[in-house]
Length: 260
Image: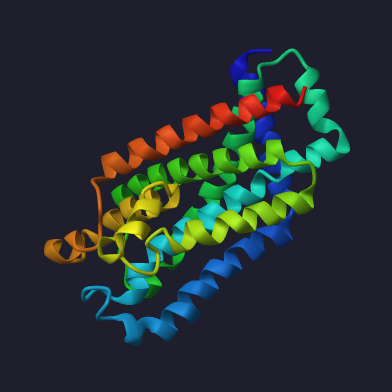
């Protein structure tokens, strides 16, 4: 079977699994909306000055989109653990296909699902005063894919190393909250202690938030104000995300090899 067909088939299976789980689709959208409208509205007046004059809900919005992508990508890779418990993964691994193709197919499926979830959240942008046009959406979609692919690589590596769904859930929670709170979603990473800045520099979600914040806010925020909120050029954010995804794709393949 050609390599592209293997990757596409595995990715298609992940999409079908996602589409049939309607409760999951709804629940993964509820949490980011709660953060945005409840948490954001509650802190909007308190933290408005700390966001350098930018409306706090608008400031949070890219981080909430990135959080939704991260959670969906992580959760999608749990299918690898289920497949191991029910024996399906073993059948795939003994098939005459590359382990890299298997891992890439799993990551591609998780990436598509997470990106679709992120795109759905763009529908609320006009409600919070964020103006979109097709070029902005296309640029955002690129970073949504990169963030989803990077996080799904990390999730797949974890899933390939654990034995049970329960263990995956514990480890996922261990990663999710530090990744989210050190992503710059709630406060700019340009004004944090050095130790926090060092940790955040290894956080893929921070690079996604940094790029998406620039893309979303640049058309409507003063350039000087925006410069106080962002860390790098979007091209540097994209480079880090691609390298991160490649590293964890390779790590997941090695973990698969050790299991057989």
